[in-house]
Image (cartoon, rainbow, N blue to C red; front, side, top):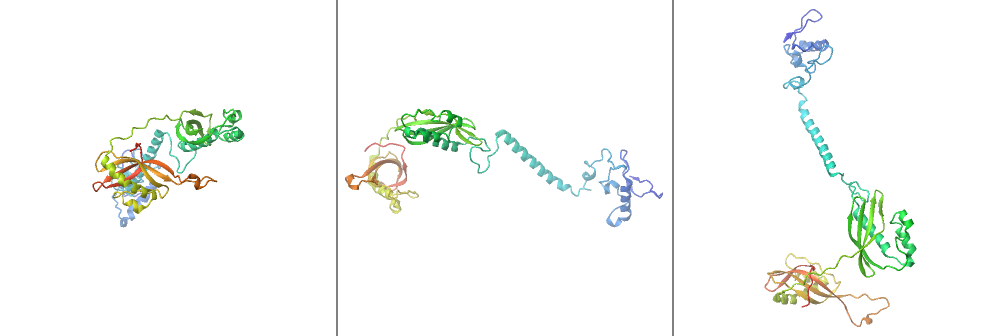
Amino acid sequence: MVRGPASGNGESSGVYYPAPADLAPPRPQARALYEDQVRYGDRDGYRETASYDEMDPFLAGVQADGTVAAGQGFGRGQGFGRGSRGAGGRWLLWPLRVVLWTALAVVAFRGITAIISGSSPAPAGGTGPANATGEFPVSLAEAYATEFGRVYLGFSPQSLGQREQALASFVPPAVSAVNPSLGWNGIGQLNLQSLQVAGIRVQDHKHAVVTLLALLNGQLMELGVPVAATGSGLVVSGEPAWLPAPPRISPPPAPRGSDRVAQSQLMSELPAFFQAYASGDGRALNRFLAHGASVAGLSGAVTFDSIGALHVPPGGASRQITVTVIWQVPVTEQPGSTAGNLGGMTSKLEMTYGMSVVDLQGGKWYVKEIGASTEAVGAQ
């Protein structure tokens, strides 16, 4: 520490300040203010022997011309960074740094994820062919191709003009202008009985082929419909293709080796169960159900007639059985006919069920579940 230079009135200052070789004296105005604080600020806790840069770290290292001397910034060991002096707001820096680096990490992670996935998430509630993900609109294309198929496969000479007008709403104008009937020569007719979607093969975000399964003139066939999607909608991009129906295969063989004892027991119980099942009587049904089982009846849509076949495989207390039931179906009279024309005959329909049953009381079986069967069962 060295004593400061003499003031303008010839007296030497009583203030000491550091004088390293590379540090120029601070500005006179700042030092004068500091000297006044030291002389008359004893009541505020200042000491005359305190160094200048210790009391005012903001002015430490400031040269006479107002510039900061080299190496005198607010680095470690200087200004705010020296000990605990002058660090009144330093504790705020670390939380701010944590927030800043966290935000930067989130931004970087989302950017890398977007680059890897190559797409951005779709907007909530977005529908239609133009979506943010760039994916092909599968559901909309299937519905669009189905409506096109109804028009395309149902034609007759009497409806030629109507068919051409309807087709024009599905195909590009250039195609409709050159080939308004899409290849039909106007002779003969097709009787479309049913039509539904069988599948779709998406080629990219703009092109796909929808396959329709149709019953046409009593025969099954498939129709391949090319569909293109753009930002504004859909279009059948070309003529469809007639494809073969799915091949018919031989079903698995009927189950063999029925348990005759259990079959006899169930044959005596199942008629009453199916009567309750047909009527939908919940109280009657509960008498045949295992604990915790829940079965909803048919609410009188049919009436029980008889059991056509039953297969009970060998096993333990729990079995998976197959039963064929003959239902009596209500007859709808044709206009102009009378009930007497039927000669007392009843409409009947045979159906096969798969059932899960359990023996809880030595020969008394209870139903756990009933539904459609995946197996066929032969006659008794």
